[in-house]
Image 1: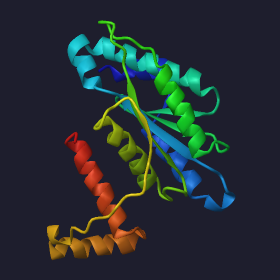
Image 2: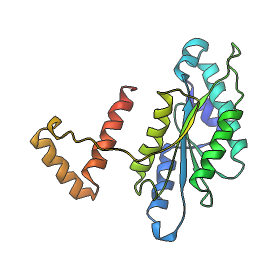
Image 3: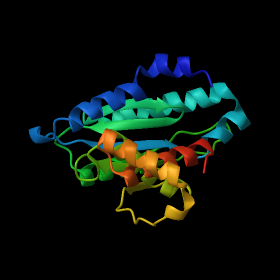
Length: 209
């Protein structure tokens, strides 16, 4: 995919800018600034490039980006995280429920067709700073997990992140790994469970599961 063409037309900030902006907001918790994010991507986008070519894939992303920009209407900032994944950082006066309703409206109103006439669909996940997580990695992971949850279930939906049930897997790690994990947790001031969830999500994403 010719990512430069998509970036040049849309002129959205990238994933790094998304992380920097959110990290800065999360660092100022006492200011009371709210931050709700949505992550979304195109369902079965790989097939768009495979079946119709990269140019068609680019056109889909450009059309989607422009559609999102018009639909947000000053209610937030849109970022192109990577590939067909977009991130939206909503303005501080928007609550999570409002963001959900707006994303649901955008999802249901989407009308972008492929060369064969089939309409594309999107899946999205939503998470709120401080309410769902206080670190960027955890907040991003929760929104993305919500997105993947619907993608692998039925697609074409918007989901709020939900409380996660922990299952002990201590026997799956060596004593050396657990010692190193404990050391990392203390050094970074981050819970061991959070670090393990982040690592596992990275692994699953790498293998497209």
